[in-house]
Image (cartoon, rainbow over all chains, first blue to last red; front, side):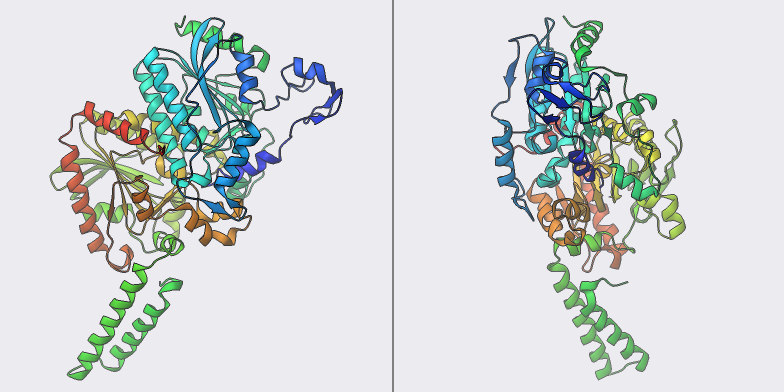
Length: 280
Length: 314
């Protein structure tokens, strides 16, 4: 129980910068930034280092060598195993809406590409698709990509951005946690590197499965990373939590993240790590 | 304690009690009348339990008198040697485990402990395990692998503990680690949901070659109350959420998430411990015997295929 409470809070966090013509206001420090600067800085505030959430395509553009990305598992899409409906109507309607909004079929895009010439398999979650929630299609794509990496002896990189397991697919969503971890066990058996990149947010069933079993854990600055939601914890222990609770920095302090890497340095760092891991 | 929907049974029961106190030693037609009342009670109970809604099933799964892991251990195992601690931080009383004998089978028993009385419940955190609980579980599983004995897990938790300390010590990492290690464990794993299969807290010890559920247990990605408060914006819509989430053993069998349902005695496990233990032991033995024949290599391959197939619909 518990972690899903977070997704609502996450959604209420700073949204995209207010779109004005030339200027953008940082959702975090409220500084006005020249829009061109903002884009050039990869949607990071150069004053407070707030990292805006990115689409999967933006992430691929930042990390992979130009033209090297080949998308895999494009046929895998969302499912509705429970024929789920809530007070707002059928899940199927919501899923279709999310597909139209994002051009995706599920909350993750997968493929292969090169990082400064080193070929890697990659899965990139996209928070826009139902809060990046983990459901059957997500788990299947992450598994298929891991198996592709095993077959072709590639390192695997997963970029997480998720509020946790998707309630609308119920127990089937929960089973994506052991499913994805079973795939990563195969990767480990094959002695292939797995780098987990945690971005804002990485919580619930995603943090409690593939995001937390990397050989290397990298987080973007100030990302929210944790298991249960802040409100649930506060209600449980009847205490206020510190402001920096469950931030990337807090996780480094407690030993669960290796390093925090600024978006502009991410590609260089991945390249270096892959080199140390013996990839070419 | 009787549940809301058992009112009619409770009424018959109070009539029986009244009858018995008026007729301490019934004879002739009075015996017949008592038998008639007993039959009426049994029929009513059967009728109610045959038509439990998912939300009613949740009430049964959480029943305060429902058998807990220690009841299962003493009812099924001829010996239990409890082992303590994760060797890293402490000993979580909300997750217990140790060596046990089920007939001639040496097994490692691991599971959530909710606690019976308030004192014990507090010590066990009401069955909400902490990272050290999951790490103790993993330590014992690795030990079972080393000693070539199967692992049997008993799942009964509202969920992993959502606390500040638990977060700081890596609740997410502890569960994630177990999922990965269980997938690769070179010894048989039988997982049994006895009461509440609460989300990540349940699956953290739930990656089994065989996954079983008692007929009135539930297994869900989120509690019905939690789901209702998020998707219905109203925590009182838990019954609706319980329906939508498909959390009963029957639904999970249909979805091919579990392998078999262990039928509970009429009126639920809390009404008949002996009957529950008998049915559970029989089913566990059947699976232990067949799993022990499979080589470790084949076992892990099968386990991978089993979980990889979950959620493939097209």
